[in-house]
Image (cartoon, rainbow, N blue to C red; front, side):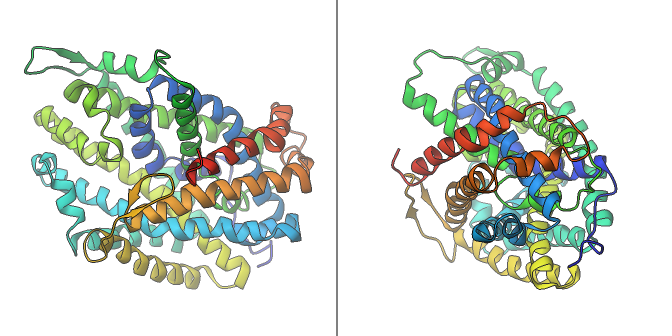
Length: 463
């Protein structure tokens, strides 16, 4: 595909909102709050912010610069930087290929919960066993997964300007308003339990934001640091080809550093607000025990919280799951785009044909993931000590193995083979300042590879 024919974002705002839309997904709204609740709240957030400004910044800058420099999608972009390292593109494209089916499955769960609250059945969602009862059904999860996948595919079908950019410009501002509104409401909550103990949203905020270093061992800190780093891959959509694909649609006169800073700020604010919405509310109605719900925090604990809020809880539940749908769709669009753009560039196939091909593939594997909780149910012990089904195995392969591997190889490519100047020259090509230039060089050559190597060791059960 020639550069002349290549689509592009109409401007910096379109790019920033699309990239932020990719970054602000289930990783922020679902994963960030339960990790923050699990990992000592404030200490996790402190680690996350420091890593976002250094580790995350280095990877985000690298991938967007590679995309714009090569004007190629992930499958072919890395080979343009170094023919010997072109295989990174295959691994980077494999990540969204694995993620898309199970992401759409979880997106289907969100649609189901939204429909449940809209139809006034939020009380049912709060009942014990509701979530397990739903995902173990054979047909309902498949139907909702298909609806979510079709919504995603229609956006991709419409292209970069009329699809991705237009959707992001509409959904992202609305999502931000909803997040801020629910966060503020969460802080006003107060509840007295059966023992006469009153808990407030502001107490929950204190637990969420203020680091507690008492009784923290080095091992505890290492786990929190690794969790925060693993979350960053999710939060800023790196090492899955997305930012390379989006970078390839950015015009040469766009100020990349300014855009990257805006994406970082937008993503970090939404991640922090997502925790602010959820953690204090769960603390108010369920205490510290409720905060340890893990991945079930959004689908198991929150419906109970909404029920305890009374009539207003039904409204908040509708708004909350509507917001999660927005976040999930903008992210699934970016995941699918990374695959579609790769097929278009590699095989010179039209967007429409590429989208149909990916839709069919995602549909087949999405059904397999849904059936992983009933027809194809099994329990497999993974190297990191967890036990999982099909969705968990996909998640482990993509997030614990492939994404750190892609990041490590990208650091080797830019830090040592093509050299950091490859990226530095790209982001300063219009005379822009690179204020964190020295931090970038140190991170991409030394710090990020060491941290990622530690993350990989943890993933395979060595740490």
